[in-house]
Length: 115
Length: 114
Image (cartoon, rainbow over the protein chains, first blue to last red):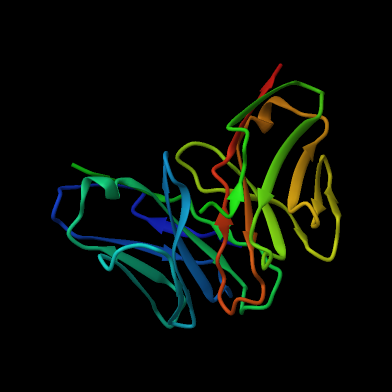
């Protein structure tokens, strides 16, 4: 069974640009969530999608957005990039429909560097 | 406000001995707890979990203990092996929240010395 696939693995962007990251979840998983990992803040929740609907959003500015497609694949977009957006962005998929004890499986992440 | 805390940033253990990693939480709504292992520049790998209806869960060399009254959980690795050297994250979720969100601690770097 294929795992969670994130593309690209590495990305270098300039301040002010925008970026789109992609995530393909494990087959059959309808919940996709995104996390940002930085050395100072650890892993922080960005947002979660289930069946194309955003169910929850973390404490991040509106420059961070996402969407989910009918095949459960998800994208996240960051507009007007800032140096502080440099981080490892992780996507996780799970079977969770809410009210379930279940684990999330993570992709390898996209390392974004903003210069 | 950090809802999940791992107070030890690092831990060194001799190969073959027990590694004990600790985690505290403050949110009473958390009822499912997970441990993940992470290598640099890779995604976290799920290790073991426990629901709030249990106080112990074992999987091979890994055992997680939950003390709900103290809002504390721990991961025991016995025996520790050099390949266990990684950063370990404790995570928690509220299964009744209507969405799926993991709240992570900041991690403990485990070094197993051969």
